[in-house]
Image (tube, rainbow, N blue to C red):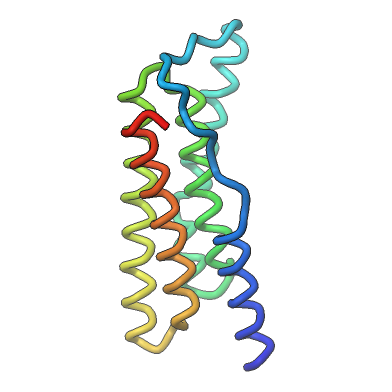
Length: 144
């Protein structure tokens, strides 16, 4: 039990202390990629990440995958969508999508905890990830 608690605390600390997911926007529109091959690779990456995310939370619920793996999949997808975004509006939409996904994740973690299937630390991990995404969204809206 103590080992599981230490592991959960370490995961939460890792999420909170980890590097920022995405660089702050410069306020300028992103120029399109210099090659059509690059653009195609970016689209393929987003598609693969969307496929990865499907059913990922179910694996967390049954204990096959740790929560951090699901959170990282959400972040990776947002990063991929940001790579494709050419306007500030598109970047905001990508980060808003990430916030929605992490909000749902947090709500599901609360429900699992109420059913005795999740710990308070798991909820804190999901909440910290959501809050980090919301901070990123606010910075993006402010042009920072």
